[in-house]
Image (cartoon, rainbow over all chains, first blue to last red; front, side):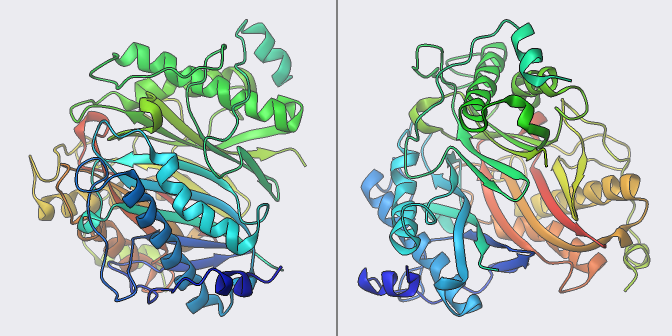
Length: 154
Length: 154
Length: 154
């Protein structure tokens, strides 16, 4: 299992690793855990995808945004750890969807990120626990924000 | 202190342990911590309670839903750990209430889960840190979603 | 680096450490980590700041509320650990802003807490990972709720 190679075979492009939009670190390592800040949907050109699920964008577009958030998290991991192979497994994902009060398909949306992680680290190590929930609003009206915890190899 | 026996004395019925509604594990163990995914209010017949606090349901009904989420988490623990006695203590609960913008009684609602955990593991080990907050929307319009972290016995 | 002395030099006043508004502990220590419950904006007189960002209060007022939440967390740390010097570093902050659906400045708001922590523990140890997001509602209509994880000195 080579996570970097798995990612290459997906033929996806990493966006630039985002600089903090406030006073925080994108990633912090404590013991064997790597904590990752809430990431938004940074596109290849460095700009953000925007829009609220149920109003500006539909569930499929929001799922693409969640995949883009996943790519942005991969960019942060790669920039800070050097290789995606440093990750032993996904521990936890908090998937937050910017949605209208009647939106109900948050798990479908966050699968956009979870499918990416499963492709990179495999169907066991690439899948952790998760919550998928609906926020009233998100910074810059991004569709999805995701924070995560990873276990690193010893 | 026998958590399984404590639960039996409550005369409550566990719902079936839910299958993931997306790409995640219901529970993941890392070191001495058991991370539990966001759970919804699964009823004994396997269907979900639904409704938004402040609109479709009131605070007391939402509190009952939070207790049902607690029962669903107990079902996941029992199915995966074999016994509730494997849990040393509750570390952390994130209680998310699907609520209207003017709803203010989230702590009262999430007490429905916290009272259950305190009954099972006792007034010290059964009570951890907690946030009780209001979401704009939740999957399938469930009233409450709760994720949790437990410490396991060595 | 003396965190208590750093705090004193800010000439700010700690509010009273809040009693739980529900069934939870304000702080729980597991291993070297101190988990802190979701805290609200308790003022020096013990009352809560209230209001929704984008409706009742603007971004600057919400940022002041986030600083007040930070002070409330410091009050809990001081009351339970004895000294802010017991904290080795900030691991994680989840900053939740009670906001209207079109609010976009959550990172700016939560900086009110992050700037305080950076002043107390310094620009490296005082800054951890963070998510800044918008809730549909919060208990008692408080503007900001923040939960946090700290690493303690060995």
